[in-house]
Amino acid sequence: MIKIACQTIIFGNGIKQNIERILQNIAEIGYDGVEVGGRHLELDKPEYYLELLQKNNLELPIIHVGGDFLNRDSVAEQLEGIGRTVSFAGRMGCKYIYLSGAYREGKTDGDYLHEARTYMEIGRRCAAAGLTLCYHNHDWEFGCAGKGMEILLKNVPPEYMKLAPDVGWIAVAGADPATFITEHAERIEALHFKDFAHKENPRAFTELGTGIVDFPAVLGCMKGGRELWITAEQDETARRPEESAAMNLAYIRKLVQEGSA
Image 1 (tube, rainbow, N blue to C red):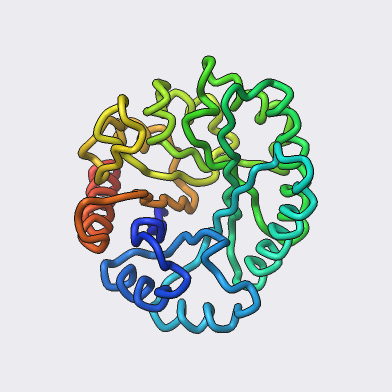
Image 2: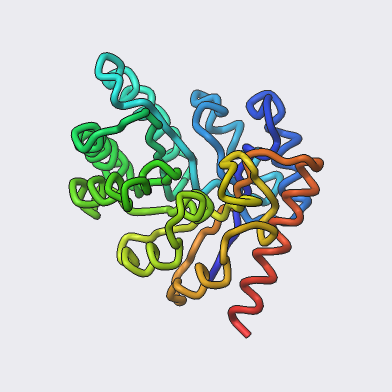
């Protein structure tokens, strides 16, 4: 069964301050759930968010976190912050923590190995809280024939890190999302659907199905028979956020319907 979440990033700035209106909008559009970045949440108010989600009949399956773990002096502090988010997510009944790394020019194999050690520790903390850590890629992990991504996958055991591939970033990097998903099927837990108008400008975000990503091929790689969360994530829009979010939901629903026909 496929469920569809909306990443709140499409609503721009002020997510924390406007969360009540945003969740109401997402519910009215018809999404099953919502994905929120941990920095947009007040982690000492789980009851407030639980009530808000219940009011709007929405699930919160995913909280997204990130960090610059190559900044050695701040790793301990960053881990402490992620630990608070993990604790909050457990109290909220979340299923996943999505983790993104940071870009750095000239990233080396050693840099990815250092990140992998930190990701393993985050994965352990998630597992202890009953959550699954999923790595959410950008495009840079797929430079040099995907060497960075492969280093992370080889050095963090599957029990501590699954995958929630962002198919848009994979495509913008010049790789094939369907091939990546097929090759790593045993680690795929969920999907991030993002689209770009063209590969030349990695800021050219566009509504799903209007850009470069072959979404039917991506969905065709996924085996049925289990719950699968797909997040619609559009970082920026020239339209009203509600309009783009509605277009993205309609596209995924059509895709799912055609795939099951």
